[in-house]
Length: 328
Image (cartoon, rainbow, N blue to C red; front, side, top):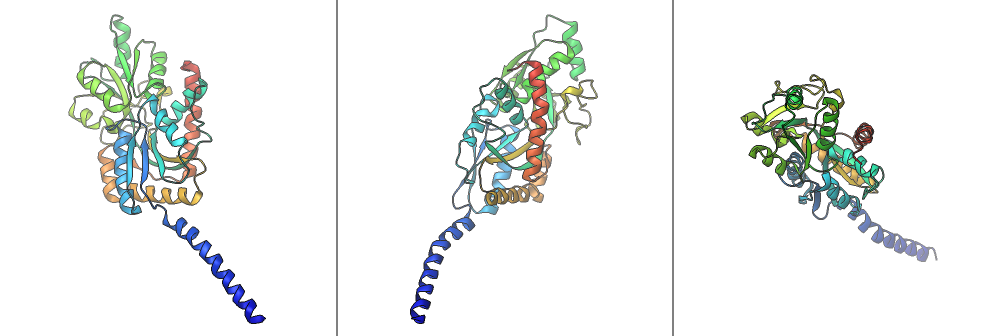
């Protein structure tokens, strides 16, 4: 009897192991298929460029393709909505930027948000800091935001437009705040991303714009676009002639720019941790750091908690501005 009991125990142990092994193997196998990284803007802008650099390095380290999927429109909300509704399995992630908390607040205040930014997303990492700059077509006779305000005040016949990457985007809200603080008038023209906005500036059909530095760094250095100000708290290393908005008398426009990785809410913690590890490894690789630096970006690689804290902080800052501007 003892022999039979021992044999039965061995059989049950073998069965238990047979069921346990596939689950363990599955958990260890992530990723076992390609990962999609949604970029909620068209190709060619800062977020797209940074995403492709990081995705390439993650592909090398994770053993599966990490492919960029551009889903532009609505200030980044179209792509963010797709991400919010994706399966929380680690195979759909998103690279977003400073516009994310702002556009989410604008949509929420207008009662038309397709997702809840507080409950539908999980932070993975702030990948990089990228200064946000105001730009102008070369034919605009002003070297900074203060001169631009004086120009528009002194010549009421000038009909200037400013462009943004979409309704409720960073530049849209900052543009409205600038108009109020400076006491001027400009019309807002929304675009589906930084690339088409820049093309209109270069062609001289649009007077004023703004986006993260990487989108227009080459043009600013070449002199084909003017840099009127940076919203960063200090002047940009390598571009010391660009004044900060605070220096020019517009402290309400001061905002730090960033790009970060998000996953759908309820993504398992072990997958979030793995993605965080991969993002940190990617952005801190010497080759990647050099490429990011050439774009005007600073490699970060934060924890998920640090990213969540920044998102909440900027949402509160934006909420006050948007409510005051009545953009909803």
